Image (cartoon, rainbow, N blue to C red; front, side, top):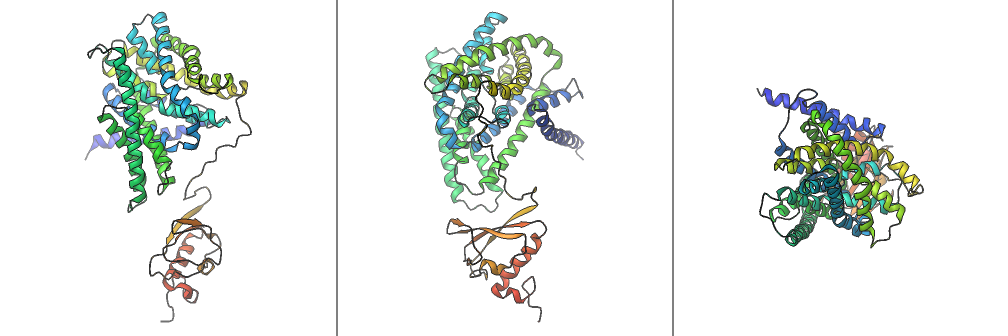
Length: 501
């Protein structure tokens, strides 16, 4: 009945599944997954399957939506204990370092490629933001000192906000009435300051509401948390402040709060961020025209070398002056400033505003990201060893996942003891759970503890029970029997029913 929609869903589902499979393939090859997604977009575009897509404005809007989700997930997964010690350096890299990088790249591009100052500075601004997805995916495979990893991850989460502001200002220069330089500085300061304040307000409000809300389903909590981060972006934008900084700040506050179903929240945000990345990268691959990329190779290489060998090292040195970071650490910070989808999304801003030369800028940024992502991501591990900044004794990251535990073929069950239930007063060993099932935690009056066989259950207790897949049904039958008959359950059938009547 809706053939257009049916075909769109068929193509979309196929692309999504291929993209998910590409994650495993790219991980085995050591190639960042973003390149696989970009290649997939190009493959189904005008040079591959022939799907023509050239809606720059839609790409920019959807790109911003994807960035909101990706930045929110970065904030939710950031641990305040590791973020706090490096927050100063990360903030310096995201402000002072960004300014230095823009100026250096702008000067080099202006002198070597002969571009006008506005377009040259746009090259520098678009490329001054490191990419959170690329940084996280690459660094998690390496053994590095915690503060080095935390610095790079915090920088990639924070620097999107000032860079978006600067790209918008440069793209609108000449279109709107010009303002003195001090006005633009004050404007940037206002947007960052108010954006951070909005993020704090949204995060605190979300923590207060979600701790006290009794939502009818656990699945609503992840949706509510993501809703608060999107609310932070929207409120910041309405106030003409930095919505991206508001999203990150709100995410950090919510991610470090003791919220109900916290692991489910983080898992949902992670999955949503993956979906946003897949959609964003495939869309950007669709937008590019491969026939124009040959002419973009030389500008991309010149700009990339200026960024890699001059702008990034100088921005790190200037930003790290007030902090105790050794030369080797600074060199690694310089080399590990990975670019990804964010610069390509930012390049759609001048393209949608019809800035002269913006089409060449977009093509050059696309080529640069592909070339230098391959170059840097593949050499980070040797560079870390050569600079002696590895930490082989550092404990590897332990990944914890909530139930159901598919690999272990086990489920996590929750049991409540409501008022009037015959479970009240029953000892744990009187539950007579089958082998393979055990009560692992009891939550009583807000305090959790590991029970023993003689622990007596009370009304209001919450129990966590681990059961293997083979005995889950039997364990549930025993629990139902005890809930009906209490201690007398052993004299009745497995359902707690009187078989003599």
